[in-house]
Image (cartoon, rainbow, N blue to C red):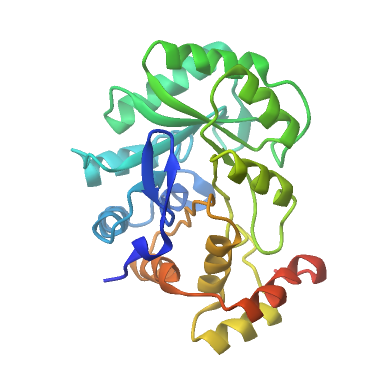
Length: 293
């Protein structure tokens, strides 16, 4: 079986987790909305991930909505003591599946309660506050009010640790002045590297960075340079893209998602792939030269 501990561990809140985890978003239906195409296959993916050593699963109650959290509970409860479930709040879905901001105090309280109920937990280990000033990406603006509301829930014992998602470097700095921030979750991959400076800053302070869409998201990474380098190493392009992230900085925690056991095994195998020094400049140029997808 793949040894994902080959990639090492990093602190996430009060726990140490394997750097290669799993993101549950793709377990919901098309567009992250509605039930999965194959309910039993979704359960199998979750159980296979944990059996392979995954101890960090990223989820949210607005995936589905409610779908992925209920699948996680059905597949994995009662949870292993070393399993860290990380959820996020700050958004909601309407009847057609559109993503809407939901970070009023009342909405955040309801979101925490929904996550607790659907995951079957008394306390959430880590909650990421997703900032929705712009649905499509980070946008400057104060995050004080919603983060203070989440910090209040932490003080009440419903949340152990707090992270931020879809944020700018200035918002991270503001957030750290309000409460302890244990992780930042933004879009980042070989082709989208706007957070390079932020990653390095967080690494110096021992804070985890969790890239979403590590393989490009809904437009998967496609690059001749990536494909050629992967072929040289006897790996798939997506395995190499994940391995590059693991080498990029020790504070990067990966949560690639899939609804397929075979694809899960392929992703987890990236933990054993070593990227030679001479390959790194080739991959680093992809962000400058661009990709197609």
